[in-house]
Image (cartoon, rainbow, N blue to C red; front, side, top):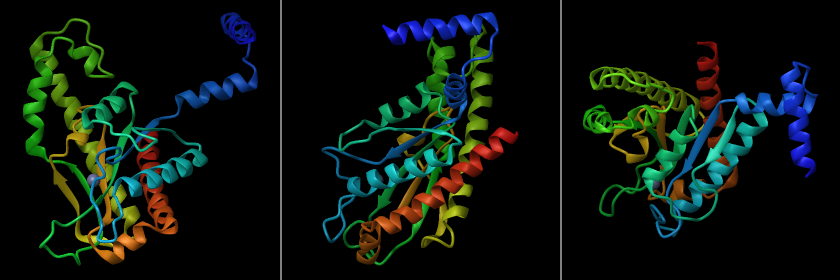
Amino acid sequence: MMGIHRRAFLAGLAGLGLPLPLHAQVARERLRLPLIVLDPGHGGADPGAIGPGGTQEKRITLPLALELKRVLEAGGRCRVALTRSRDVFVPLSRRVALAREREAVLLLSIHADAMPPGQSQLLRGASVYTLSETATDPLAAALARRENLADRAGGLRLPSVSPEVQRILLSLMRQETRAGSERLARLTVNALDGDVPLLSQPLRRAQFVVLKAPDVPSALVECGFLSNPAEEALLKRPQHRAKIAAALAEAVHGFIGRRVAA
Ligand code: ZN
């Protein structure tokens, strides 16, 4: 009951144009902060890659994402949501949908690589992926065919425009999202460089389903190779994960800083 009365009281104040109490202003300011979606890879029945020492990828990605969430929230410049906060299976499409529904400014998916058996188990280093450009057109076409495009295109509110105009607007949106994804990936590589071993060509592209939101800039970080025993040992150490999380937080802050300034 108290809650309802308080809310009605605050709504009344707002209606009268009186200043809101400080805590209500703070709550409102917090809601305006950009939302970051962190996606700890795998979970539940899907362990992801498994290192020679038996380390499961899903058990590296979750604590890393939780640490990154803690650092970002302490920075006070964004809100953070996780696609999973426990050891549960979440379909890839659901992870993308969450970021789109909540109108996230970016999605960062967190993984750890492994080389297939028989290939060099000595390969090590982090890398960052964006969606392969060749993969975008069929999806754009499929999206454009949907009747409820305006709602699904999150952020685009198009009451009644022709399919042709919808197609053009969607294409523009995808271009902007792709540019955002590339910027996010570059910032991430730059932030990791020097703190964490990197692959020789750390900026890469592939057709990851989790990167396919047409309206949310997205990148996927492979934090290292679990198949390399030395890197497996590193990734198990909370101190090493904290180092990665700090670099990723720097990249996120760089991304939203630029975005606010633009
Ligand atoms: Zn993975």
